[in-house]
Length: 359
Ligand SMILES: Cc1cc2nc3c(=O)[nH]c(=O)nc-3n(C[C@H](O)[C@H](O)[C@H](O)COP(=O)(O)O)c2cc1C
Image (tube, rainbow, N blue to C red; front, side, top):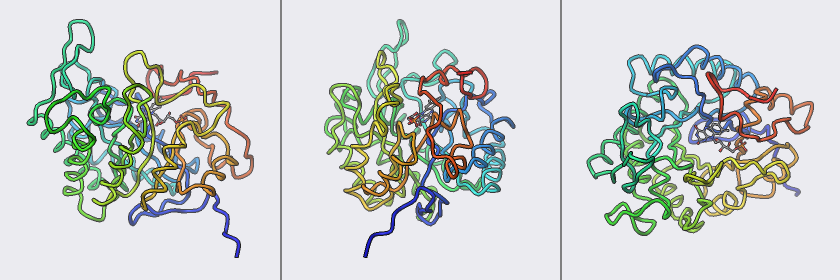
């Protein structure tokens, strides 16, 4: 009997949560918080996205410690009233039929040091002339890990469907994973068992805080797009460890975003080639039984459905096109043409709330 074709509008499950279709809005920073707090405008942005039909929305990265933010526009999960605000955002999304996960992060080398944030990183480094970050101590690492755990607990209490640990794009966890940035000589450096330790400890602490049934996702790289890079088999090792421990969804990205490495996780050259990081996701999806999502450069339903049908990948994540066209997923039901997002990355220059900067 012929295998039934998978449609991008077919549901899938993450742990016990049913996601109504295979399209994920990958985490996208909103540039919207006021002094670390959510605003009504941000809730409206998420309501609109959910109305647009995307199955699962991962929020922009949120800071697990107030000292780990990248600026005042980043939501901090520790302010009084966070759970109520996050609860209202989740409710707005649920009313429209979508699901929401919160992406949790510590900015590592990209903290807002000018405003007194942590100056620590995987390895000591002068991040700007005159500004030296020290190698994070074990006590500091433990405090950050607990920050992830407590934040996840608040997200669960708020009624969010899950959390995503940000292990990609040059923030703290990703710099531990990468041999280009991790020069530590203690148990958090060296081979992938050492470099992966922070991510695995973070996962374990989050799992202990939220219990067995709450969905935990991770976004991680299969390559750093810089040498020396994390190797695909090393990423695979980390994924297998996470799978053993009970991870519910793995989103595969790439790029460690070192200075001078422009847009390593959001390449500009996607227009001609869809699925810029597909190869890594494909390999990981073949190796683990948990759902794997692939992100970067997906622009047409035909290609997305080809990937869903020809690989073990379960879902496809989209970011930039949904900034320009939040209704894209519903629009594709009757018009399958590519969005007119040109992946120019000018959305990174949003002043105030995230918006496409191309008129
Ligand atoms: C404006 C902007 C903000 C982003 N913020 C985040 C973020 O907070 N967390 C994250 O993991 N990735 C972030 N990304 C990366 C996207 O999630 C995604 O991995 C990348 O843009 C590639 O997907 P695309 O080609 O569909 O845009 C951001 C990308 C853009 C353009």
